[in-house]
Length: 202
Ligand code: MN3
Image 1 (cartoon, rainbow, N blue to C red):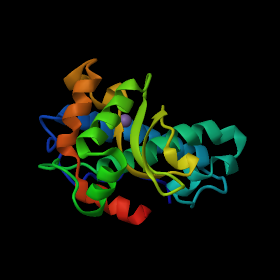
Image 2 (image 1 turned 135 degrees about the horizontal axis):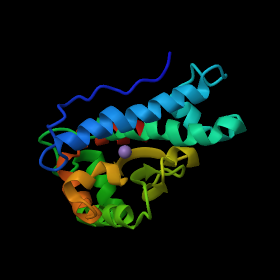
Image 3 (image 1 turned 90 degrees about the vertical axis):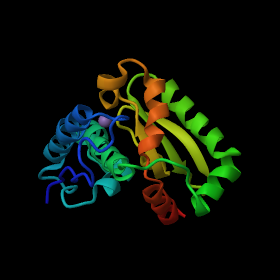
Image 4 (image 1 turned 90 degrees about the horizontal axis):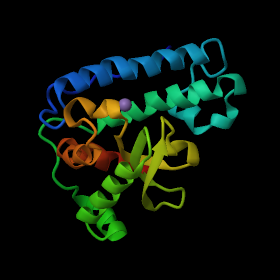
């Protein structure tokens, strides 16, 4: 079964004013779809067809060399965006509580410090890429950036949450003001969904 763009659990305009409707239509409907189509085309007829997208991306060395770049970029694009949609929603934001909130405080000092570190890494990511909260192979929380559609999963990390800092994620509303987008984005983060990923990663 070929990969598909997952349905959003919210309307295209649900994240306004932080992420506008047109950005969501293009980002989810066209950009993500393009990654999925190219990913499917790359693995069609290979042993990878039928495997899970995350499984493929976690083992890039096992991908035949002639399609490895296509899989890295487009499989990564599919995996990254699927996570991204799943940790956002309408009327979200606030602060994480429970074990996730405690882990963030003990790792970064405070939620505000964590946000600052995350926004700074996202703002400092040169060109297109992502910023992530990950659980390292040692079981520690960390903030990392990746270029293009690379995913920390390929380095053995588990992804807890991530923000897309490609211009297509914010340009229609924020133009070149990526830091403004990074700051506003916290208003659409679904920390229940993030906490679930954290619990599964432990
Ligand atoms: Mn994107």
